[in-house]
Image (cartoon, rainbow, N blue to C red; front, side, top):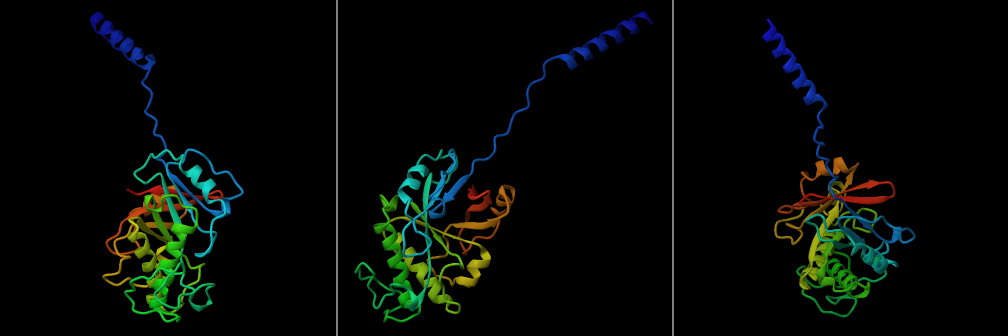
Length: 264
């Protein structure tokens, strides 16, 4: 009986010692790094520091104008931490197919800067349709790379911002696609990477079904429309905008800024 009591006391003391001994701290989980995209609407504000990557808008809201504070925003972007597989700095440009209502519309297979180009849609004759839309898109991309103060344009990935707020044909999906394909042709020609930004809904309204053989197929997708960071990470498993592509980024809004999670 005595030995049993002593054994019980020993076990009790050991248990108390375990309870009062210092316990190792639980490992903390740092938030996954996110990126930020900004453009002309943020010209009057200072974006936060510490972003993993940044995407800067080259235009001032339309495909044929410039972001007035691009160089200042680019300088901020270059201080990104690079904590994801995404490039520390990328660019995005507005896209459109405005047709004859545009401030400049091609009359031949010659860009606004006077460059003669190969046109897979045939000859542009100062008319609406795929042939002239291709030249228009090519011209806008050429202007973006050469007239918007972008240093070393082939060093960046260029995201094509495809949204219904810009000017598009309501009925000619082929012409809308041709404008985007013209932009892809220019950027690919200088050796730059290209990606597509949109929502699946807006993409379907503007582009429709992308046919086999289009250079839009296989490009990486940057998807908009997530409610928050958690939702954005879930949407990384969404279908890309075109066949053969991958979802590279998903955007969400927090406060008055656009944030982005990397899906790679």
